[in-house]
Length: 191
Image 1: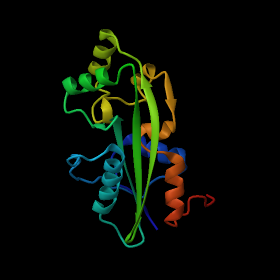
Image 2 (image 1 turned 90 degrees about the vertical axis):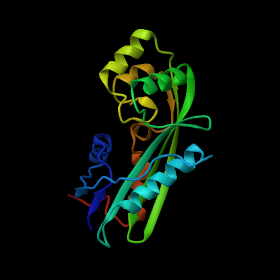
Image 3 (image 1 turned 90 degrees about the horizontal axis):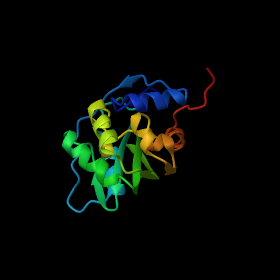
Image 4 (image 1 turned 45 degrees about the vertical axis):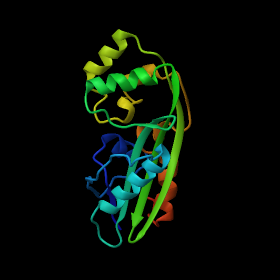
């Protein structure tokens, strides 16, 4: 039984390693990540995680792990910014407010797919022009939902969270372990 990670995210690989797991293969997917008209953030994240898991070509006994992280401000989905201007708009919008970070995890084995979501509340402080410009010039916002990653420089902008730190990073370890166990993956085998 092989563990296939359907993501090129170094953070997800790091979080798997934290759980003592190294994927047998990393096979990133290529799906359309645009939200559907009227789609709400939590169902959107769950749909993308499921579609990613189904898009990875594997053997019948392989276990595929995929995830999707979405930042939501109310009903609004803040995806990965297209450019620094959109990242600045997202960070300004989030400043001084609480928002949700939703990470949906999907595990597939054969024809079965298990999906769980981790929902965390995050408060970001209002950024000064110097903070915003320094963060934008770092490039850390690229490829990150909402335009930030809590594990990097933006961690200094987050005074409060409620929920899963690993979920905010992109792979909630407790939910991931439960899904892998449900799929029959030997999580707790001795080395």
